[in-house]
Length: 113
Image (tube, rainbow, N blue to C red):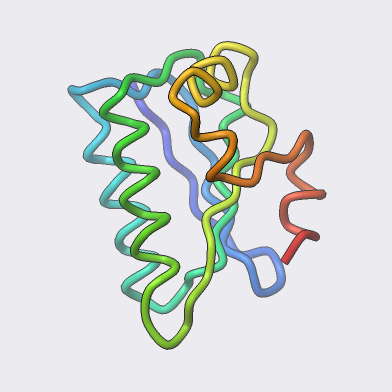
């Protein structure tokens, strides 16, 4: 099961994800990210502390959201906060640690904007 909580922190949209992100539910993550970006909320922090597994489908949704957030008049970014050890390994193996900004705490990620 995947649990996604969206909230506002100052000028930043915080999306906290809990559970497993796999091919069966990655689209839920993508929809949550797309909804925020299309609403003009392009400064996003994706908190992955509660994610114990991330498949390539989940990574695709994050990269797709990053591309959408950087486009347009309100160009923003998608930043990662406190990924679990396993998720950080997956991000590094995919080379996404060089594309995404990854922060050890939610507060640092929010404060980076």
